[in-house]
Structures are given as C-alpha cells and as structure tokens.
Amino acid sequence: MFNNKLFILELNEINFNLIKKYINILPSFNKLLNENKLVETLSEDKLKNVEPWILWPSIHTGLSYDEHKLFNLNDYNKLKYEQIWEVLENKNLKVAAISPMNAKDNFGANSIYLPDPWSNNRVKGSFTMKILKKTTSYFVNNNAGNKKNFFMYLLLLICFFRYASPINYIDYFKIFLNSLSKKWFQSIFLDLLLFDFSKKFLKNNYNFVTLFLNGGAHIQHHYLFNSKLSKNNKNKSWYLNEKYDPVKDIYRYYDRILGQALNLINKTNTRLIILTALSQDLVEEDIIYYRLKKHEDFFNKFNINFNRIDTLMSRDFKIFFDSIESLKKCEQDLNKVSINNKKIFSTKIYENFIFVQLIYKYEIDEGTIINFESKDLLALDFFDLVAVKNGMHNPKGYLIDTENKFEQNIYLKNINNKIIAEYS
Image (cartoon, rainbow, N blue to C red; front, side, top):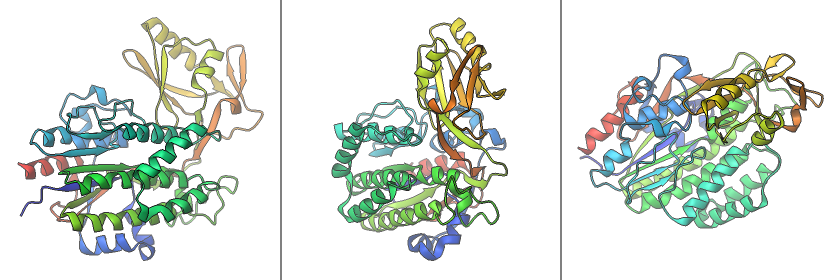
C-alpha cells in the first residue's frame, strides 16, 4: 500500500562510511542501518560540478547540471523547470520545504517555505518564520567573525521559545554552554532548532516535508582531520586541540534528531528518506579559508565602484553593477589585488554581476599586507579566518528509505522522478 506522507531528511554531505565508525555511540543510526538498506547514489562526472548547490537542485528537479544549469549558490532564479514541491502541490498535496538549498521561490499560497540561510527569497509562512529565516541567515553567514549582534541573539531567543521542543531543552542548554568555547556547536544548535521547527508539519498531516541540514557538512569540511576517518593528518594545535572531535559531536546530535524522527514517523504513519547528495574525502594539501568581513568597506578603500554586494556561503560573494563598463573595470581591478604577489580573488563574469571567490589560502599574520596599485591595507582588518580545509567533495552520496524502494547506485536526478511517480 502506498504511503502518501513522506519526510525527506537532507543531511548534506554526511559520510555514512564514517557514521559506521562511530556506530557504537549512535543507537538510532545503528537501528536504521540494521533495518534498512544503505544505497549509494551517483551524481556528476566532472568534479567541478560536484557541489551541493548543483546537486540538490538535481534532486529537486530530476535534472542533471547540463539540464538545470544552476552552477552557483543563489542561481535559483535562473531555473526554468518545476521543482518537486510544485509538482506535488499541483496534485493538491500539502508541502513544506524547510531550508532547501538553492531552491526557486515558486511555492503556492498553501505551501510552507523557509528559504536556505544564503537565499534572498521570501518566506512563505508566519511572521515568526520570517524571524527564524533572518536569525539563521545571520548566524550562518557570520560564523567566522568574533563580533556578534546582541539584537540577533534576542531574535534567536524568540525563535527558541517559539519552536524548540521541551524534550530537547537540556540538549539546547548543553549545546549553548559548549558553543561558548567550541564554535562548531553553533551549527549544532541551529540544526536542532530547524528540526524542531519541522516537527509541527509532520504532526499536522503535511503530505511532503523536506528538511535540509548543513551543520554536518560544515563541521566535516573544517574538522575531518580530528575524526576517525583520518589516521595520519591532524589539525595544528593553534587551530584545534587533538583531544576534540567535532564530527563525533555533530553525529551524536544527528543521532538524537534521527531517533526523534523515527519515533514521529511511526506515530504519524510517515515514510522517511534520508539523502546526503554527496560526501567528503580528506584533503591532500593545507588550504586555509578566509572571508571578507567588511565587503563594502574593502572595495570603497580601493575606490572600486559597484551597485551592491550579495554575500554567499563562506568566501564567495556577488558584486552587482549598473553598467558593463563598471563591471569590466572592477574585474580588472580585482585581478590586481594581491598578498605577497599572490592573487586574492578569482572572478567569473555574468550579465550584470561578477561571482567572486576569495582564493588566498596561506597563513595570515599581523603584518600581512594587501596590495593594490599604490594602496596597502592590513589583511587582518578585513579578513576573518573561516577554517583550515579538512574535507573535499566526493560525488558518492547515500540514501536510506524506510520502505526500501531504491536500488543501489541510483543517479540523483532519478530520485525525483521515482518519488513523483508514486504520487501519480
């Protein structure tokens, strides 16, 4: 008999081969893997296309990159095809999309839609949902900086009292205390809050609910050397003490989330599918990630003209212009900015904006100078350390379905078609 209630838990980039190494402390994952088949998924052949903002739209549209053409984060407005939520909503089903990566705002009046933290899309839902979007966006995009906005903490508190489940209050308290000295717990706090937020839609008989969680991917990228996956490579002591294992920390809280999800789907007769889209491998070279912390101030210092700047994930951003002349001039200037004769930025020109990535990957100290023509700036005035890169993308992903209807080595684009076919 077909079950028309489905919860898709999108655990971005999580390594199930690594989950198995911690399985003795992950009872919910242990139960799930013992009772269901672990399926490997396939994605893009070209490594440059193995990016989450490309692969998740493939799952949501049933299209490969060559078909949907979404290459950068926040390219969603270019999408010309229906996403899975639209298709199912047109079948008079109640849908809720919670933080889906790089999704276009094509949701009907009866849908619930909370945009991902990097998106400028509008919330489809209550006023407190708008506060939740503003709050998650702020903390995700300011994770690298040390200065925090007190008002945003007040908004986070409002979201907590509105959406946090009492069953998790003790966990939230522990996570908050840990976050004071271990900043990766901030990602854990936000993921748990988003899961608690999603519960209301599972309890209120929504037919199709998707929840995207990125904390695990973020932590793996930054701290995979401290996990059980790494035998030889370890992070330097100035970056992270070897006694800590942030990957274990996020996996344990994901296990708690999974346990509550399994309990909830049993009570509500809901099918659960877990997707990762891709996974991660250990990097083979030392790469340090930085991000600009004062984008507008930085470019104004160098008299670079622009209309506006949209910040994206980590070190990426878009610079928009009123004229093609200003765009081309800025692109030329960006390629002249350097540290120790090494370029700082990579650029790619689009119709009215430049996609920019901060590519400088070497250690910066108090005397490091940014050079541009005759002007110099202290790098630490404008750069924040994001992380020492530990994990790189692997096109292999994972899927678990509590109804076990998927075959091994399925392509991501075919997942969409298989789900929609069942609702027909």
